[in-house]
Each structure stands twice: as structure tokens, then as C-alpha cells.
Image (cartoon, rainbow, N blue to C red; front, side):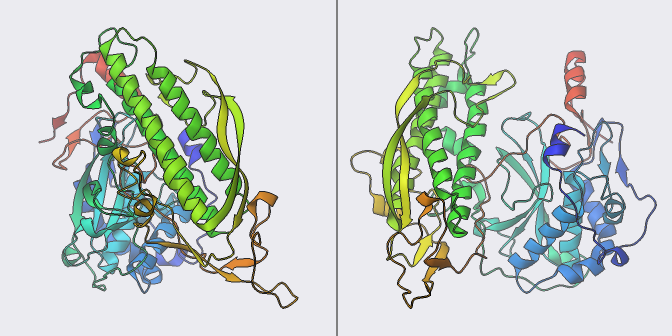
Length: 517
């Protein structure tokens, strides 16, 4: 089992309820190749139109009363009933029935997308098959594919938000990407009549093209974040010959640091929502690591670099560290103190011991370089829910908070938090048994390791999910993780399919992409 297969392994459900609903097949491995054939997204769409009928009876069970519930049901079905297994030398396109037949052995992202698209097709729900380029895994190639469902089912306008169905992972957040290519599957052209869904609630925080003017959405692209930092705009024009660090090193570290912070915000939101005793542990992990990253990035940039490229790359790294330090210690702590009574202490540590990796292979910034001790790392000592707290808004990096130039003496905390629009948890007094239901200060005290003894969060079904590019999202990265998609027009093309083959092909100078005739 490969490292990626092990990482994405799940104990799948028995699926007995669906067994009689899916046609029995012995083959129907519609698309396969010798490792040099890329069946594009358009080929996948053709397969969906031809074989989606195989999911008709399953679709009838999964179709719910709203678009979000239907998408949740499809994602749950895909993730928990099909094992993951990355394709190797032979890239396969499976019909839904073939995937079901081989579900215990495992399928890859293409087959998950075909299943999801087939189910949506049977329901008459418009959607897109999206392929993406990921920043730290062969960034110039298409390496992952999944399905997105626009809330706007009339025009298919994804600027109004969309839901993500990616069966490879348990979360419904979208992977970090630097470029996308979408193929629209209109419900008018699909077989089977279904409701013309208009989603009205539970919208994932996704906005096309990373519209940073939208408050309360973490939908900023990596390029937009990248361009926030000094010297970075000119990095691509540098030859970097002889330089220790260059543009690609910053890109790799950016692609690791951004999703790490997003995941920490995601975990903290969930812990608060669930009234979990892990809240303080997660908050201190965030505070500790952001201090270490800031310190390490600052010390890295302070070296007397001889290469102009290294100077600019490390300056961008320094500004990235300061950027998240400001977000966490100013906006995040202001959010925390809005709802909780918090006291602080300081700890010590070394600036190279933060969790997030900043290097992949021989690219990215080295954590072992420029190691210093830090004696003033801010940590939370006590944290308890304020007695006046009735509801808590989900923490997000709003448009105001995302602008690096806003931080300083004139920073407006109120403006930074006013864009928060999603209720995370509603707290109601819980009887103590003596008739006292007022709760009181410290009735939810995370510093004691306990949860809420005096208050009960009543809307735990409110999912805390993010999607889209940039600050909100995650990465699926590993050698040989996915089919490398090529050919922007979504035409069938020839391409080298695996990392190992690509490496050999580069040496032989045979990696040029050619269209099939």
C-alpha cells in the first residue's frame, strides 16, 4: 500500500442497502491506458452521460429536500462506500457499476468524480467536473479532479457559491489550487428529470476567482496571497543562478503554510462548536507555531544574502510569517476575547520546531537553518465562556483582516470582525440541579480540561466547512497521487501519467504533450 493509499484509507461501510440497486458487471473498465494516455475531463463527461443510469436507483435514496443535504449525502456515499487507491502505470476510467464492483480494492479521484457526477445527473442537478493544478506537486500539471455544484442552479453561476464533492477525502473542503479548468454539466442536457434546486442555506465559503471584496469568505487565491508580500512580484523575472533560495522555494512554503493555518482555524471552530475540552490545546498550538514561524522567517531573511533572488525570496517568506502572526495575534485573539474570558502566559521554544513543513524535496525553506530560542511565546493560561455569551460566530479571515496593510496602530478590530456572518454555536443555560440555570462565569471552562457544565451548545449540526482557493482549503499531495491531467481544451491527449515515468521522460526529452487524432 502506498503512502497516499494509507493516508486516505477508510473502513468502508458494508453497503448492503445499495447492493441490489446497482447493476452487476464483470468488466466495463471503459477507459484504460499504458501510462501515457490521459483520458481528459471531457472523456469522463462522455462516460457519465452514457452510464449514469447505473446510479438511478441509488440517486433516489440520496436525493434530499435541499441542495446542501443532497450534496452531503452524495459525498457521504462516495467517501464511506468506496476505498481509495491511486492508479499507477495504468490510468483507469470506471463506470459507476465497475467502481462498485471494485470498491473494496479501491478507486481513484477520477472514478469518485464519475460516481458523483452520475448521481447528480440522475437527479437533474447541474454541476461542474473540475480539474486543478496544485502548488507543490508538479505545479504546472493537472493533478486532481472532483465535482463542484453551484448554488445557482438556474445559470450555474459559481460566483454565488458552490458545494464541493471530493470522495477522496472525508471533509467537504476544497483542495488548494493555483489554476482550475471546469466542464459544465447542465441539468437540461442530462438524462432523468429532477428538481431545479436553488440552495438557500449551508453555503460553503467559496467564491469564484477568490473575490476578496466579499466579507466573511476565505476565498483568496494563492496568487493573491503571494502578491501581498514585498519583493515577490519581481521574483519570476530573476534567473536565480547561484542563489540559495528562489521563487519556487517561496511557492512551496506558501503552499504548505497557508492550508496549515486554515486547518487550525477549522479545528478550533469545530472544537468550540462541539464544546470540546481541546479548545485551549488547539489555541495554544496555533499561538505557539505562528510565533515560531514568524521568528524563523524573520531570521531567515536577515542573513546577508549575496544573491538578489535569495534576498527577495526570504523577504517574501518574512512577510508571510508576519502576515499570519498579525492575523492570529490581532484578529483571532480579538475574536476569542469577544466570547471568552482569557488570561495569558508566556512559554519558551525554538523557532525551528513548528509543526507545518515548509520544504518538499529540495524546494522550500529549511526549518533547520537559522535556529534560535524564543523566550516570549504567548500562550493561553485560562479560557472560559463569558456569562453573557448567547451565540458565537465562526472565525474567518474577513476581507479587512486579510489586508496586510491594515495591521498597525490604526487596526480596527470591529471592522475585522463585523464581516463574520455564520453562527457557530448557540449556548443555552443548563440546569445545575439546584434550580440555578444562569450559568455564570467559568461554567464553560476549557482551562480545567472540561467542557461546558453550565451551558449546552444547541446547534452542533451547523457544519464548519470552507472551500475555494487560498486561505480556505487543503492539499492532497504525494508522489503518484493522481492522474496528471493535461490539455486545457479538455481534449483527449497523450501525457506521461506517473511521476516516475515523467522523470524518465524528461531525461529522454519525450515529455511533449501531443493531441490524439
